[in-house]
Amino acid sequence: MHYIKYSLTLLIVITYSCKSDIDIKGGNTGEIDSIKIRKYNDSVARDRYWNKLLDSLQLISIGNNQDLTVLYESLKSSVFSVYTFNDSSMSQGSAFLISSDGTCLSNYHVFEGADKAYVINHRGDKFLIDKIINYDTDKDVIIFQIGIKNQFISPLLIANESPKIGEDCFAIGSPMGLSQTLSTGIISGFRDNGNFIQTTAEITHGSSGGALFNKRGEVIGITTLGFGDANLNFAINIKNVDYSLIHPESSSTKSTSDEFIVTSDKAFFYDQPDLLTKRKAYMVRGDKGIVLERSNGFTYIMFTNNRGQTTKGWLNLNDISFTTTNLTKNSYYKVQVQKAYFYEEPNDASKKSAFLTFGDSFICLKTENEFIYTVFTNRSNQRTEGWIRISDAIQQR
Image 1 (cartoon, rainbow, N blue to C red):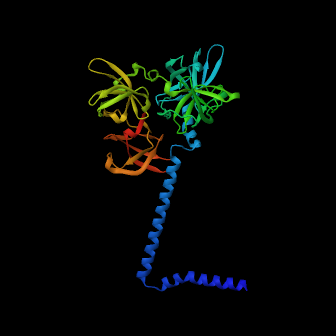
Image 2 (cartoon, one colour):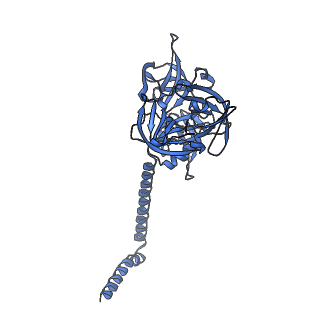
Image 3 (cartoon, rainbow, N blue to C red):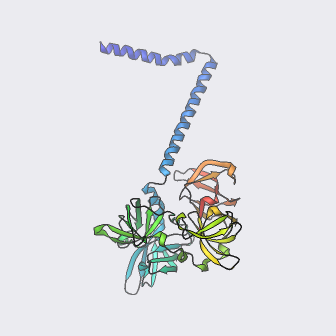
């Protein structure tokens, strides 16, 4: 009996379901076209809804806390294994790239007493060390330059904010010669008046000179020392690296610099490229100077006023405008904001919905009106072309 009832019910449902098709076939052409158009519009609206949802999910996944696997893949090529030699021994450590001209940071003790040295990347390519730029034995920091020839290796970004205790972090280095080893942990303290960051990310022999990153993939420290049994690991706080070591005065040459003019009433100097190190010294509207380096939305400059007083330090990019910009075809840039939008034309009125995200690298094809024209292909092989604001990116020199 139940089977008969079920069969009758199913038959009625099937008949009702098919009834619309029968009526449509028998109806007039106008009604059929109207239904087809309505169904098409519904389909388009549904596709748009799903596309918006997928875009939202993509934005969530791109946010400040990028997937560690993605971060590691984008950063590992900029961390090297270091091998140093003297007459009687060989030592091994780590180093990382901070400028596309081959400038690297490491621990001084990795190089102490060495007669020669070289670095190796994740593919096994060997790079000879061209010169030692500077070093500080007390702070255990060394800056050197490698010969990267015509290769472009994306430099690491230096964090413009100090981490907080309890935040996630990770390190990439070469412990025991095991290149590009990833270790994770948290910030567990600050020691020696903030000169050292204590972390649970493991640091051991061979990791010295590697990079400690925050959860956004920005460098916060130089990995230096670890006590494995007690899980006590320490990195030199990148905030306490003297930037005059990286930018010696001899590097001030107009041929490789950008001229700028101050557009704010006051453009304050900062000790480091972050908002936490503001100084009393400032430039005023109309003052002109030369940019020696750019980092994290700041420019490192040396300025001499009309009384012959010289000041050097970092200025916020928002306080200045470039009067002549030495941009060349095929030079590389890295996005320094969360979203660098594309524009149809080199002006603010032609903004598109497409954008690059923090850390993306792109090539300069041409420039106009403080915009860079580029063609970018993402990991999904999707191609986007258009104009990017120069102020949204850092030139990789």
